[in-house]
Amino acid sequence: MKRVCLLIIISIAVFFSAACSQKKDAAAQNSENKISVTTTIFPPYDFVRAIAKDRVNLVMLLPPGAESHSFEPTPKDIITVQNSEVFVYIGGESEVWVDKILDSILDTGGRKVLALMDTVELVTEEIVEGMEEEEEEEEAEAEYDEHIWTAPANVRLIVREITETLCGADAANASFYRQNADEYIAKLDELDAAFQAVADGAKRKTIVFGDRFPFRYFADAYGLSYFAAFPGCSTETEPSAATVAFLINKIKSENIPVVFHIELSNERMADTISEATGAKKLLLHACHNISKADFENGANYLDLMRANVESLKAALQ
Image (cartoon, rainbow, N blue to C red):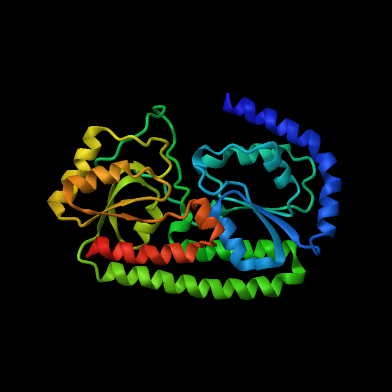
């Protein structure tokens, strides 16, 4: 049913896209000839914002505070993609709707499209001990983990690719974009070093999540093991009693001081585990999306991840 609805939405958007082209031309004249850049979710939005600053007209399709895995584009969203010179998306299973939109767009000339999962080495989501596994078809293929930005080393590659894509669409500002990218990558290097220092000096190497776990790339980068209720892209939010009991016993048996939750979570599972074990409940922000208030206050990837450094330090002490 979702596929049928999406096809209907796409058809409506394509029907009206020609009418919108004149509006696009007028808007271009009123925006100082800035190129239009559209991203699906927060991480690429924030990376483009850091590289291009005010030299582009930037739009994020996913509303702040919304759940990305169940997002469905509106006709307005489809027209926004249609009218963009640059379109940046992640490319995973939660964005299968993107391919349908791109296939539906009649005028593809000159548009730069970048799938960020094409820029890094991918790993599959894994089911670790105690984790609930969603019901799948018997021969279903393993899904690649979409949360590629949780490792700063990946973001270095992502930023380079975004920068070259912007330069290809807007050569007049190429030197500006590349300079900003260099400065941003230097900050990523500092962030990476801070996480590595915490991991190198850690008393333990295990973290526990009373939540989904969208940190596979992060854990691999710093040699961490983990236990969680669900994999990162799980649609489940209510764990079984057995899963909660497993995580409680794991924290007690290994004297783990922190139980993590992710952003925009209901936190009920982490609360239950914290109350049963005395472990401190902390946020480890996956930067998948941010609240409306944080968005309006200019929250960014670097600041959120710097806060994660301190949270990780508390968990590994």
